[in-house]
Amino acid sequence: MSLRFYIDDSGKNDPPVFVLGGVAFQAEQVATFEAEWIAELASPPAIPFLKMKDANAGRGAFKGVPRSERDAKLARLGEILRTHATATVAVIVRHDDYERIFAGKMMAWMDRPYQMMFHLPRDNQDERAASIKMRIATC
Image (tube, rainbow, N blue to C red; front, side, top):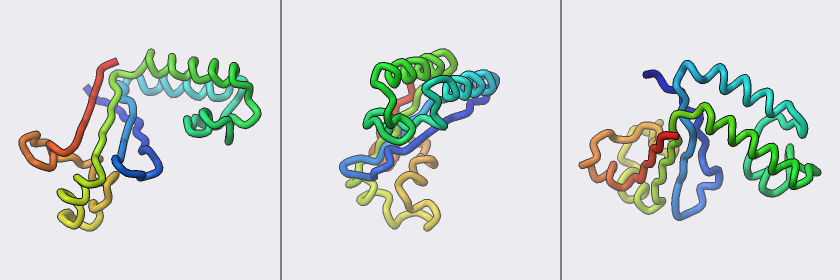
């Protein structure tokens, strides 16, 4: 089975953790998901993309959108995700664990928290792997 992942970071890098989260789709579901997602983004109130930080704060694409319309839009987008996603993914690394275990011990191109999180060690007995909390849940 081939999967496609859509993943985003927490954006701020604020302690105590670095966070990646996302959803996975079976490859054959991607076109249908994308078509429904794009159609919902274009439906009123139309937004160019979903940024939850903006939705929560009522700014960006959600500036001036009444709360009830925003909530309905988010519910419809959530339903599209629930309908098509195969799994959700969350990866969390504590700042202090990154500094203690990883920083300065990898190739320069990988020695950044989020870059490293995309290339996690596969051996759960490894101290590095044990410091990473990873959650994959089927939908």
